[in-house]
Image (cartoon, rainbow, N blue to C red; front, top):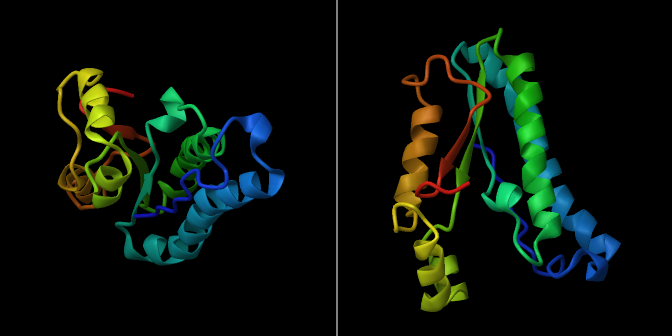
Length: 163
């Protein structure tokens, strides 16, 4: 699994207000950190005849979110990376996919967002439930396992029916 996250901290806010340095830090972490991890793993994965890469994106990449332009842009770039890698790696036997969690009930999210935000997200989610870390882990485990014999280039939202 390849996941690097720089959530909008200093890169949060409207694009016009985000400094170029903050924008670059977010992009470098979310795109370059992930790409570097994958680049270094690929020779080992190709040698295994059953390599699996699971990138972690975010529904924010497709749906957007106020104040998250750097994060959304960098996570959306993972779709381009996945699209290219499926062609570059499938013949040697490495499958590359994306899991895209929606709002997930992690300790960090529960501390950061109040019940009003969680209720609002639930109301806009077809299942009416928020994802758990276990939901996300199950999707990553499947795509990263031998049970995934021929899925590559897929985008799998784990978000109760949104994104």
